[in-house]
Image 1: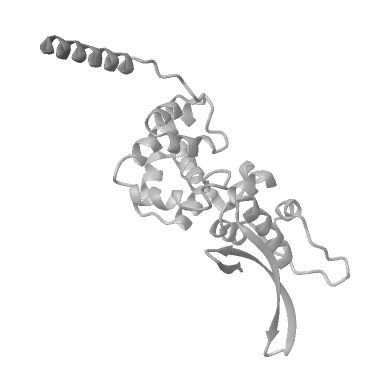
Image 2: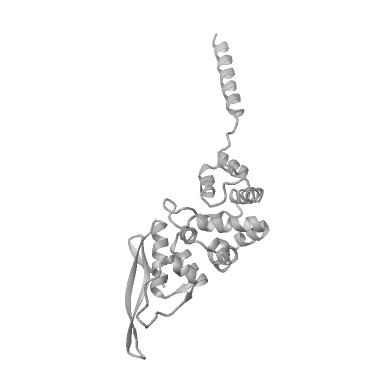
Length: 240
């Protein structure tokens, strides 16, 4: 009897395993490669799916996701991907901006993307991928705001994409909206700071404008200067 019960138990386990093994995988995304990622790592699939334009049936995007996923789960670039995913507030950002920049490289040149990852730095990635922040990807403030999800990204963008335009002295100076600043590709310190604060708040940071007086020893002159400040770990920092 015991032997019979043991045989029946084994058969039940095998039957259950067989049903599980042959349960069809239901597609979750339009991007076939993204579904493959989802069935192996739901969290990383979600990170990819949050990036604008990824969840499409475009064959180039599918190929890029597949190539990136292969390298992500390997050990060779684990350190680089760890740094990429750590940028910004994971629970608040719209998506991981450096991951988007990396995916852009995989779309254009997977070998070039791997070269960047093999000797990784965020500045190198942004220099190659963001391309001085020009082109269709940089025309709309809503898209740029979501992309600038961390202080280091805001600092790089304002340094690279915008030029300093001195404050007017004719009484007509005013604080530009971020949209006006990207349209003009520049502004003064207040305009830069306002753009950064709005982007950081959208990315889940506590940020404020802060104005200080700068004393020039040679000219014995005091001039006001506005910067963007953000709080991290109980400390305040500013972006110059």
